[in-house]
Image 1: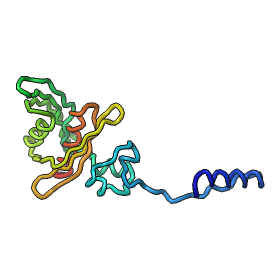
Image 2: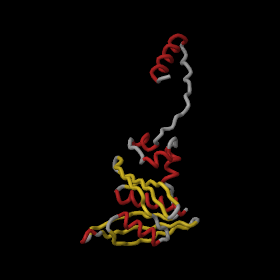
Image 3: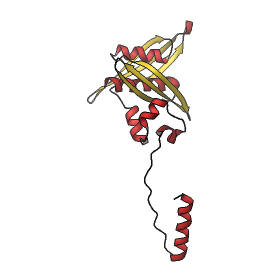
Amino acid sequence: MSISTRNRRSTITEFRTGTPAPIQSEPRIYADDPFRARFGHQLPRGLREEARGMEWRTFANTYAPTGNLRIAQLESTARRGGMFHFTAAMISTTGSERNTDSTEITATGPISACTNLLADAGRRIEILEFHQFDIFEATVTFIYAGNNNRHAWAMGFGGTTEQSAAAAMSSAAHLIYG
């Protein structure tokens, strides 16, 4: 029953009896693409197939978990020869203890910087697919990453393209090594 038909029937019932008609509850239907339902952008094909029917909270918890090792506050300064100097905070959590170490690295881009930072921490990952979208005043990055036989889709939000990529790579490392 469409909303307009339901409203018309409620109005007629209320007019005839003087009491509002009971609203019939319809079963909740989850979107085939939870990201598209929320932000209007379609997920990459492989991730869309995995996430089919998930509600948003489950999707976010599955593909953007808060891991025990994260790259945060990734910022860059351009250098000569197409290189960039990156500064970042490596946040590691064990139990209730949280350590934050500032680190610096020179790399050709944010993905290269994050890949090297994660490898130095013992979490080597390779990006197999990379997708990035602007969402309002932020950026979201989806990556399909792997290491040997383990593969995972991951998502990361950030205020900049660099921060979004760092969040997605941190989530991927957690999903693969966690």
